[in-house]
Image (cartoon, rainbow over the protein chains, first blue to last red):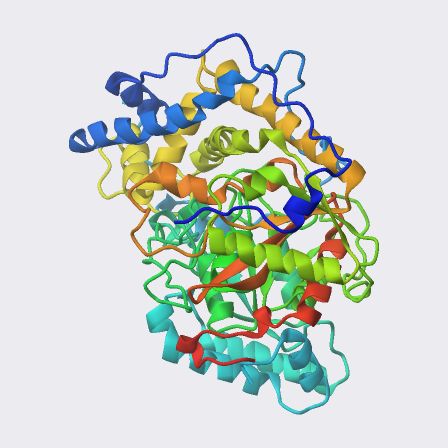
Length: 128
Length: 488
């Protein structure tokens, strides 16, 4: 793939009034050790309640290591004093009056469940 | 019939040139004929569609019609449809028939639109090629050896292949804009909170947003008029007032300041794609807009920031799929733990499992600050950079993707290479801004998209710029040879 070479208006506009902001501030160095082991993947998979087949665990570890390596760049940015942002509009959760607005739809919700009996969801025995 | 725009169909239905049953029938015939090749639909219920069309015809006859009465629309299979399977492209929800409608589905029903079917997508909207669907990949109508983009690839291919006049999509990191670009159609991701998320299967709740996909900006405006607005049932839906997005489409571009981020035209951009975007910007300049160089220095950090935040939110959202209340359940579980772990092993595909694992890791004790909190802090810096830019310019423009559609299979085994596809689109979701992709030319017969990014809640401006561009160009009128070809 041949890469794009800016021309035309770029050349004309190179000296526009606009000055680009300073480059991101770089922290001294606080890289995390990215080496994730197969044991770690097994622990995470247990937390996430996902079974991974024995023969797949090596490949899964490799892929996740690649992804963590890619996100490692975040550690180069100095974010001291930056407030974490969880909503792009900094919106706050609004509340509605605490009144019942919906009827009981148990039958239609249970109609799509894998296994029910007498209005209850069935799962394997959990108490011996 | 199938070559008409939504605006033309509305006029034809009102003038009684044709009925909704005829229009809907024509699209259903095309789906039966061509979708074996594209695989753009997961579910089509022809009888229900024709019944809805007949109801719409009665409304039209009685003079009781609303904005989109009688117009067939395809919904991405991420939106819950009462009584119709909603799979989200996953084995996990292959048997899931929702007991309610998503708010936007309800809005389309109320206006009298006809639900044509549910479109294919990357599993749980996690992907950029629609190859990770449990129902097999969708193919790009411009060249069926290519991907249509993703995750709303089914919607994009259905519109591009003239199997639906318009469709809905969702965009968490580019999933409306990138497939719109790859398939040569127009797609809009509105401001976060502009369109209700109720009944839209959640992927990353702080980034997810639904939007319209159609041939033109005018058609997108017609759909957005139905979709946008506050929903008391979605606590993140914005109470900000909406406008009629059609009324400002023709406004002059004289004096409009368009910012061109130097980072969007640098390393990694395909040469011919860059030339197409360059010509498109020239057209806007000819209409009186002023092009201003700007800089978004944190652009290089948007991919790592996104690939912490999105998987973290996904791992939380997807914990609800446990094999107990709805969806897939593994056979013969020996105990509850086996039921959970094997249901999720068998129900989820590889990419979904990968993202759940990455998200679980990023949120786990000891790593939360280093990953999730760090990403949220950089997310604020990325948004601030856009806010600073919008002090100087009215909109920002650049390419939607680094290059045109790639071949099926080219990136499906390399997650990180696939993630790089979204380099120009992710920041828009992180900052909650509205973004569009508009057809802007071709590279070797493959469509190229121009991306327009606006201020929060400035969808009307984006649609205006796109519409003016489409009045002067015909890229959005071209149709692929596989869909019979030529110019609409």
